[in-house]
Image (cartoon, rainbow, N blue to C red):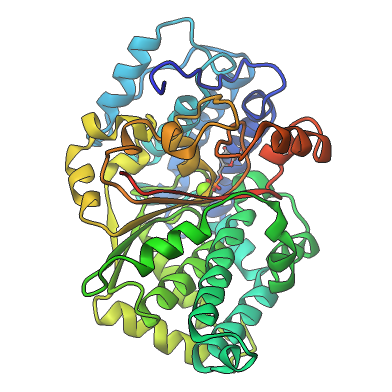
Amino acid sequence: PADQVKQVWTSDDDTMAKQTATTRWPKIVQGTIDDVRQTAAQSSCAAQQEERFAIQSALKEMKDEMLQNKTLSRLPADGGGDIEGYNTRLAYLGDKVTWNAAPWLFCECYLYRRIQTIFARSRHWQTYDVFKRQKDSTFAKSRAAVEELASRYMHIITDSSLAADGVTDDEAKKLLFVEMTEIALWGNATDLSLLSNLSLEQIQSLQGREAIAKSQRNIVDNDTDQVWMYLMHTPRSSRRIDIVLDNAGFEFFTDVLYASYLLESGLASSIRFHVKDFPWFVSDVTPADVDSLFSHLQSPEIFPNREYLDRLLRRLSKHFDSGALTVIQHPFWTAGCSFHKMHSQAPDLVEDLKASSLIIFKGDLNYRKLVKDGLWPHTTPFKDALGPLGAKSGLKILALRTNKADVCVGIDSQSRVDALYEEAPQGAWIRNGKYAVVSFSDGE
Ligand code: F6P
Ligand code: MG
């Protein structure tokens, strides 16, 4: 049962949790220190420059605490209503909990919330996004894939050739749904907290359409057919779909394409994008990243091949202008707990989501939160691992996630699990981002 499952801790041997805590976190924090230096050097405001020393030393202090495996200190008030929740959980966990011996999910959320307190409490850096530089530069490297997908999208949307190949209209529609879903799925392969040191070539090899097609066999739990059946058999007159976003840049571009396709195909009548309140897990979408996406896509310096992109941008803007596509926020998305706590921590959100025809959760972190970062047997049905959000919740949940952590459920059989461990030893199939899940729960 969900209340008894063991969560991954940063002290668990041979886990991604341990590896992340010991090697990746200090690097990520060092990256923020370097970024602040760079921004200060370019700033024309003397007071902002001056304040950078205090900010850097607060960041450095956190990095040292990690390296020395200290306890997690209480978060200082910064005006956020969520601070209390973090501190209550810290008090509950007690002094024994240190950076290298803590529940991975909570500790990682705490890390990003703590970085946020440092900027939020400053005078001249309050709305500063310490990961923006990195988000922007990686997106610029996605040029080939963005241009390719723009062209592909404009073709499929205006082309009836799919139906001409002897496939029936319904089959063609379904194939299109599968393709668009997979584009949004594999868009998640390029998140920055994991893949920050990839070369341009490596990034591109993850993104093209061919790469996406090849990866189909690596979807280890694939409920695409069930989602399609569900969408085909429910009333369409007014159908709202919610997408709880993950990363900015390339992944977000694939999400906007997906949303646009869902609207234009009539599968959805409105779409809401849920974004994070502040910089989160390096690359997650904040409200400012929504605007950035469009200004980047409009830039001929970043995307010189305008043939399809300009036409596509006009279509996308129309969806935003008409109100069919909207962006919303909720503080629960940056809380330190799993989604199993949604009923007690954010009852308003549960009610709101019940009115949605489908809630699509993008990415690894959302998936970890959905299944409580629990070390479930891999054959556990997805619906069971959802706990209170699963059976009888009334929530229609679809997770599109490339596997980048220690948890994965929904595998058909133990023999399939064994085969995966053989094919990708040491649990690489749960961790290396080359395998994925398309997991659906109808909430019944
Ligand atoms: O360990 C992989 C990791 O960095 C986790 O910290 C986190 O769950 C995830 O990647 C972020 O990935 P995504 O952007 O897909 O949620
Ligand atoms: Mg992310």
